[in-house]
Image 1: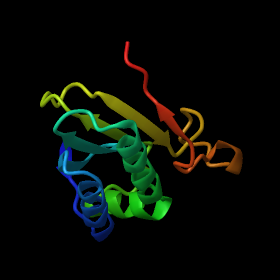
Image 2: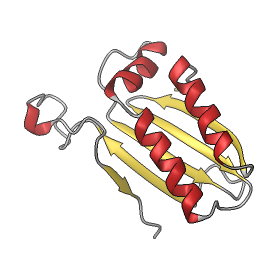
Image 3: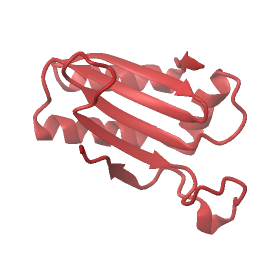
Image 4: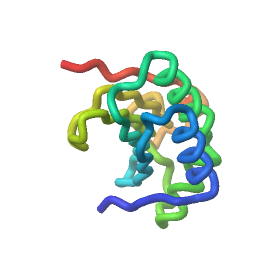
Length: 130
């Protein structure tokens, strides 16, 4: 089940992303256990500088505190495994023209909460198109 997320930090992120460029039409933040997804719908793919600024705003938002607040708002009590950020410029919500992700755990072992296995959304990865 997918839940729309609207916390104070999410509202601020939506506003920040929309203010970066008139091409940003809508920002969706959803939770589908155990992941949080931020999708920016744009009129055309933003130029690289705007895209980089959008990613920087998302990185600043993706703290353990903000992500946990979003999860708790939909009654999820565990860690959020991944935070995804996608930019959709063609109106097809199934495809993304730009996609990035960060994860809480370094490995797929969510039971390993040792400091060596905690990435805490600090490292972001670009998903390459096939």
